[in-house]
Image 1 (cartoon, rainbow, N blue to C red):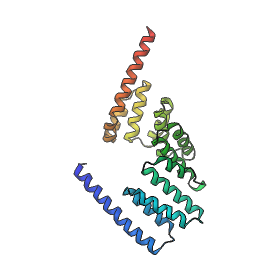
Image 2: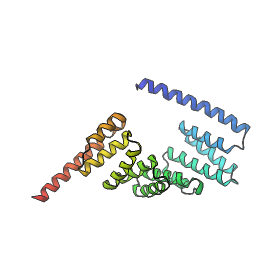
Image 3: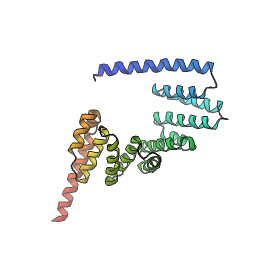
Length: 231
């Protein structure tokens, strides 16, 4: 896809989102008791990177619907997503951490993503595994578990979860590339994973070249260390 075409698509998406904002604002004006409309409007505002407006809207909605527990929980979840999108991870974690049973599973997943984004892979892994317990075949959750294990250097376990993930989404370029990194460290055949990743997701493959170079250097260093030990 050319840069020009991508630019046109971004402009069209922005235009559609702005039209949706206008419609939802009108709907809320005429139906102020429709909590879902507040949630949807906040979601569209996030798409437009209007994080302050989305936060203000949901805070207002929390006040308006304070006597409706299920609605309040959904609004807290929405507010957590606003903060996550704005990269305000401590605020996002505070919102997801207070979710009740209705959104507990989704909350665990977002907690894992928030901790991972803030660099706390150990906590991210705990919440990702908790989320996985209730949805063991969910590709996004398996990806999150595998990525955190990879970041923590638990290669054997990472391989297990990447294999489960690839059994569900064999054409995932991201998963194939990361599985290739794991295989390289483990001293297993890895080129087929990288070839598949390059075919399916060339952008992710190119972005991963620095990681690949770092892993190659690590493997070579380890081999050199092992050879010296054997002498």
